[in-house]
Amino acid sequence: MEVTLVKEVIITPLLLSDETAAKTFSITPEHAGTCRREMKDIPRWSVLLSDHGRLVDAKVFKRYLDYRGSLEWKNELETNRKKLRKLKK
Image: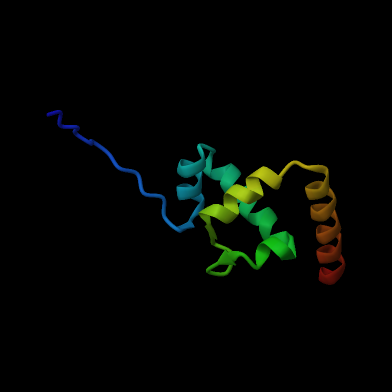
């Protein structure tokens, strides 16, 4: 009979702060914060943020990281940022 000893169990929380997202996805906290702030600028992603945009669901963040960098993402981000600038004027 063989006994296996488990030294560490990592449980991913449902909602991630920048620091937790950085550890979970092996990125820097600054990169996680940048992604989260970008999500706040795009309406279809901002509705998925929690606690006034401070926390993000792990599955949603993973989907955003996969989407980020695509041509569609770039166009969507630029369009929404232009709209936000016009509203601030």
